[in-house]
Length: 103
View 1 (tube, one colour):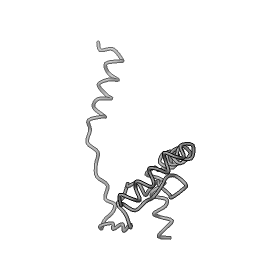
View 2 (tube, one colour):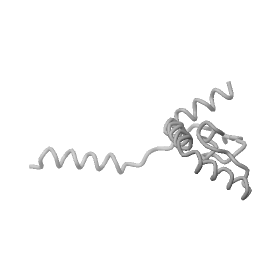
View 3 (cartoon, rainbow, N blue to C red):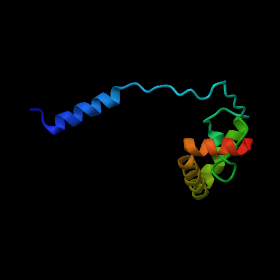
View 4 (cartoon, rainbow, N blue to C red):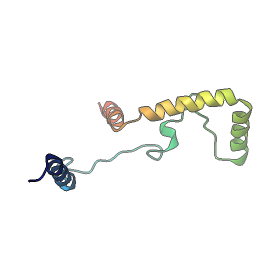
């Protein structure tokens, strides 16, 4: 007679490999318009709050890197603030922001 562990393991395996059914919603295409690439750094980087935003020129990027190197304590604060913002970004928080924008 099979042990309870084998039965539970087999049941878990069957449940895990059962394909999920697709939902019927949405019934029409959903269009999202954002001014930048989704999931990019601008989702969590806010100038002088959670990082530095600089134009993509050699001079401006060099200036930003030099500032970070000269102000290591402040750079650490920016990095920790950016990490906190990034950790707070979840699927639910994104959906809440999108729904708030359209209501």
